[in-house]
Amino acid sequence: MPHAAPALTHYVKALWDAEAEVWRSESDIPGLVIEADTLNAFDGLMMTLAPEMLAENCGVHGATVPFDFQVFERREVAVA
Image (cartoon, rainbow, N blue to C red; front, side, top):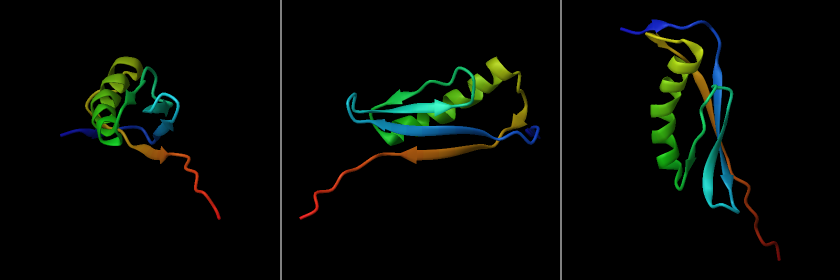
C-alpha cells in the first residue's frame, strides 16, 4: 500500500495550442513534458508519465503524491 508523501502538491496544466492543434503541458514536475491530440490522450499520458517523472527526477517511491490538474483553452465567439 502506498505511503503518504510529504505535503507538497504539484501541478499539471493542459494548455490548448491552437496553432499546433495539440494539448501541451505546463508543470512543476521535473521532466514532465506532454503533447497530445486529444484531452483524453493527454490525461492518459499524464497518469503514466507523472509517476515516472516523480520517481526518476524527485526520488519519490512508494508514495501517493497529490497534484492539481487544470485545463485551459481560449475560445472566441462572434458577437452580432
